[in-house]
Image (cartoon, rainbow, N blue to C red; front, side):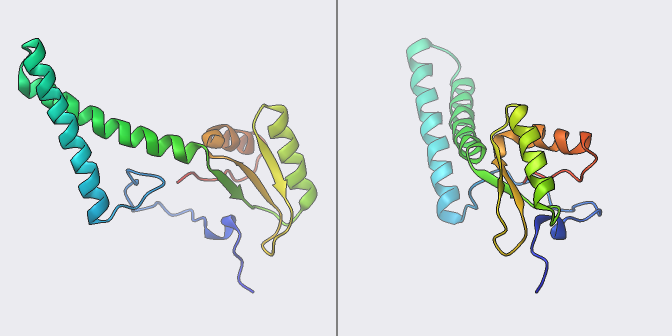
Amino acid sequence: MPDRRASAYLSSEPHDRRPELFRTAELNAAGWAAVGGLCVAGAAAGLALARLTGAPSWITASAGAAAAFAAVLAADRRKWAGMHSSYAWTDDSAEVQHIAGLLQRAGIDAAADADRGYGPSLRYLNRDHRRVARAFREAGLPPPTAR
């Protein structure tokens, strides 16, 4: 049976992929059109603001479009932060339980998951990925990588 734990897919080679803009969505043409539509709506709101205030329209339209895109990006990041991540690096359930306890004492919502065919794993919220990685490095273990 092939090894399907997260550590089996880690590589020491540098990744040539550029980072994904959205973490929870892979947009197709319709998705990008919707994001573009929201940016156009933001630009229209900026133009309305320019008429009301007398500010230069090129500034307010640009700011409106950028604010709309930033809102979409922030909503995506907020959704990603609330999702759980699972990380397996060993077959030793006691070690996973120990690390889960250390993380819980540090105020991180972490739990050890039982063996579900892939070995024991640590479950935690994505918003805590930096703190989890730091705790792993301090313990001398390979840290999980974030998407």
